[in-house]
Image 1 (cartoon, helix red, strand yellow):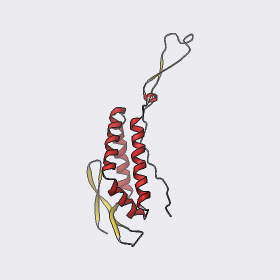
Image 2 (cartoon, helix red, strand yellow):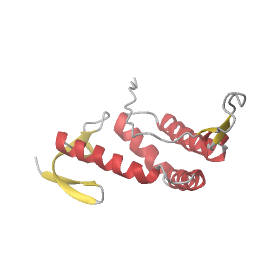
Image 3 (cartoon, helix red, strand yellow):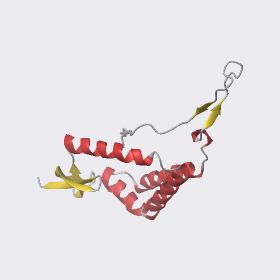
Image 4 (cartoon, helix red, strand yellow):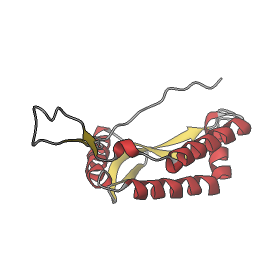
Length: 154
C-alpha cells in the first residue's frame, strides 16, 4: 500500500500505511485513512505529553473559550459529521445527529459551569498545634490520558 505521512506536533512524519474504510452498506470506499505504527503512536503520545505541559497552565476561562469555539465548529459542521458517522458505521442519520447534538450539549454544560474546587483553597488546620502554619489545597492536571470507548451498533 502507498506510504503516507501523518501530522504530529506540527510536523509531517512518514511510515504510516494508507488504508481504506469500506461502507457497511455497499462495501464502497467511504474514506481513506492512515494506520500508524508503534513509532508514530509513541511520537504522538510524546507530543501530547509535551503539549499538556502548556495546556495545564492555560486558565479555566481560556479553556472554556477554546471548548466553546470547538462546540461552534461542531455545530457548523454538524451535517457533515452526521453524514460521516452514518456512512462510517451504518448508523441511522437521526441517531448520528443525536450523538453530535449530545457532544455539543456536554461541551456547553462544562463551558457554562463554574469550578470553585479548582481554585486554591485554604485548608483548616488545628491552630492550637500549628500556630504559625497555613495549609492550602490546589488541584492541577497531572497527565495525558487516552480512552477508547467500546461500542457496538447493531
